[in-house]
Image (spheres, rainbow, N blue to C red):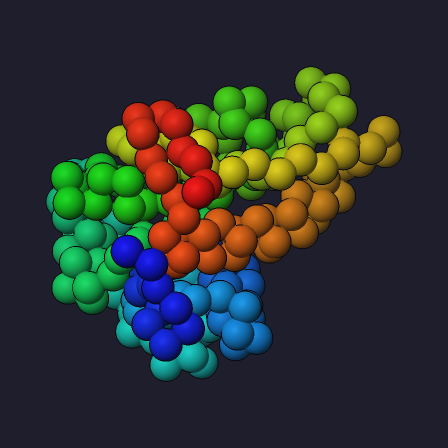
Length: 210
């Protein structure tokens, strides 16, 4: 199904920290560059600073404090139960650091952005500065970001889009992270707009734009 500015794609944004991805998406929506509506923000902790963006934007919030759940299954059900109740079309992970299990009705409806060119420097334990330091230590000349569909394993789902950035000789993790984040800020809204326009097709691990 394709959407338009008057009938936007309803998304939930999942956060665990500062909410920089959420802020970027809200800015793109405000500039009328993105046919989505953030219908819900879900946080894995009540202390996430990014919740302020939801408050400022009058966006409904659900707190699924992972420490309150006895299992990944019960935590996942809390997260997706809230998304289900909000009637969202797509779940967008934005710095969400907790593992979830994807229920059948959300298969191919959850996307994440990872700060490397998957399958390099990804998987359990690879997040934040660790990813960028690993790329520098390995000596790669290119890094970047990857948007992928989410399955039940870390950074394992089909790749939707990737964008590369150079790794410079004098980079530290912070400098590389800033360069990758600039790419993320362009690529994530671009891909979400493709979803909103109904232009993404998924066939197993092959994702295409029509």
